[in-house]
Length: 410
Image 1 (cartoon, one colour):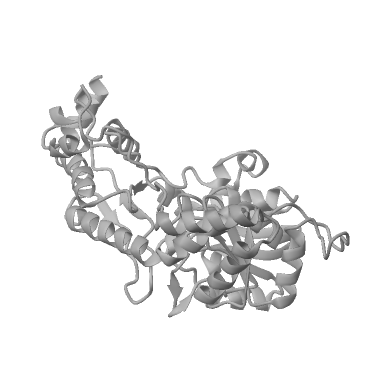
Image 2 (cartoon, rainbow, N blue to C red):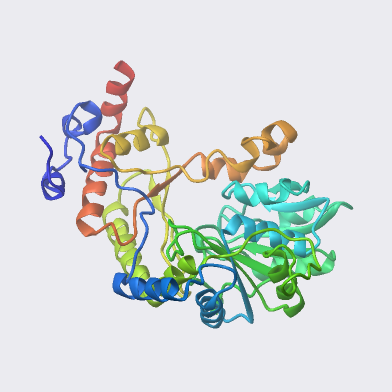
């Protein structure tokens, strides 16, 4: 018999026999995902959609896209925002517009699209290790990877926590390299009080449905370089400059009017989204702070953060539950915890075949990605959900050895 969400929440997880992995009913009647989309003001969205349908201007740099680009550029503190159909295409366009070729240094601790955007254009991604303290690309490690074939560096603001921007900018300047940032996680975050978006030659943000603010599907290139902005605008629309005048190689990377409408609503509701994320984060921190083997990723409270990710660094106790077993236990409860960005881009195809020795230079990356667990958050998750998830984790940790023995026996 189906149970309501409230009934599911009332089922406490205090002993191993109460866990779904040993036959009990799942804690949640439906899967609770990490990034269920934040929707925002539905009435405002419908009003925008009515405008679009009335105008019959659905794409091709319509008024909603132009307004979204203007508002997002102002909000981000940059001169130019070029909206695109998704962040992967934005990466590809920015890489090509900057003239990157040969080899580009990039972390492996990232979503594989960062590397794919290079390999797709026959540019070799040279995987760089991370600084274990920041979990971002290590500038000193990047310096050791520079070769005569290196043309650029792509930093990733992992979890929304900024890279060491000054060190990377100095490294790029000293070696005449292009520098861009994959800021897919970092919308609304700051570095030394300045909103991320204007660092390096360009930054790329993601408005995918799972991100803190979304445009259904979308991305953007941010830059303070007017010449670069003009070039990427051409490139996202087949190189057209006017009705029938193609002056540059290009692709179809345009954002639709519908997506821009969702972006305008998401931008207006951004503070509400962050407040929900922060509340969830603080509840997770309160419940998990004293559990052995669990370390919650910290955000710098002197900066603005979007708290989009709740990241656990999990260390297995002797004879206890492994990271992957803990995730399996959560999945049985319909909690879709994930092991981001396992196993690392360098251990995915085609990179593990093309560069089989890459892992030798990535000890901190492999150590991190073998321990990370990401937990659900966002406006679809509330305090009762967080408490229920933490009940499962606490029960599993407190009875780790017993549960591990039972799992081995089964």
